[in-house]
Length: 183
Image (cartoon, rainbow, N blue to C red):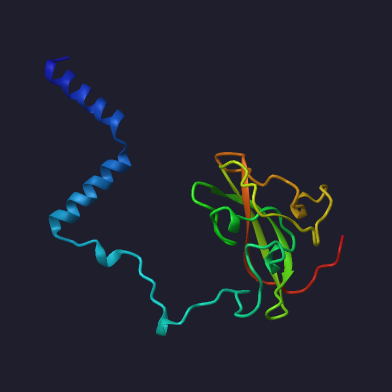
């Protein structure tokens, strides 16, 4: 093998070790866009609400729903854990540095503002140590552990990079249709 071939192989292998295909493609794309004089500002995400009115999600009814930092908040009827609202997140978002678990348990809670029942998805936020604040253990509709998919006593951090539990959130999935008979 000639000296030029060895140099080319050594350079290519060094480049492959230090930069992946995605970073190369990203740099190439940025270069091509800059060369073409294209501005990236128009493609940034922009909230375009009609008339400036705020959109409400199912279960997000204006009125006296309660305080999301308190265990008595209507969405927490089947929660068991620390409230992310008190741990740097919100009732619907994990705190920075934690990861949302892809598995969940579901409960049905009544919103006092409109008197309707809603399906609530309870997700654990994982990857940080225990929050330790605003513990909430409400077991309305909880089932024994042999119905694991209905139980709130399980660490639901399976499928995340870390199995360590931090806190829990409560996301409204939508209105509940009707109660299913107990099995």
